[in-house]
Image (cartoon, rainbow, N blue to C red; front, side, top):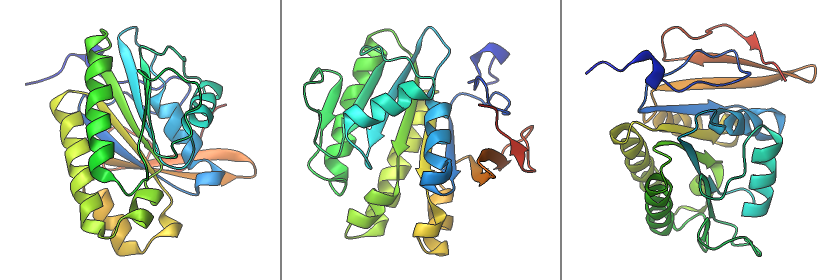
Length: 219
């Protein structure tokens, strides 16, 4: 069934065209040189019914929420929720932040993600953007990389079924090429990011009507 044009997910301030509901994107590049920032910017929702669920694997909830706000996100506790895999949530409201012992506890992350997703949806924010920031700790802490693949299959499957948007950040330099290629199979498209003399460029593979050549990213 075709989607109305207004149903597509948009990205304010980025040289990207809207994407269809149910799309999952893999953001690749050096985490400290733009990929993490790009992932967070893609998760910022301009929609009044837009919500965000963040799986924070490389920082605690306080840090990722501050970074999310710095890159344009609105910190409304009803519409922005976090699964904190660093378990350093501090005094943040328990209903908007869930803690998991370790990034290796994929089952625990999945359970908390489902709960926070449903809470976001039940609060009236039905256009949910899911972010995994970043994937590397999941791969490093897991005893079997195939468990991470199953986890990604579940997450992207839910995004597709719920007409959401999925964003996952991965530094390809931190993993073998075969792992990166295997991870990419679970996503509809790939957004490559690089830093060029302090400015960010991006290019997209796997999606139509998107910039395939390196394109400057506005601030």
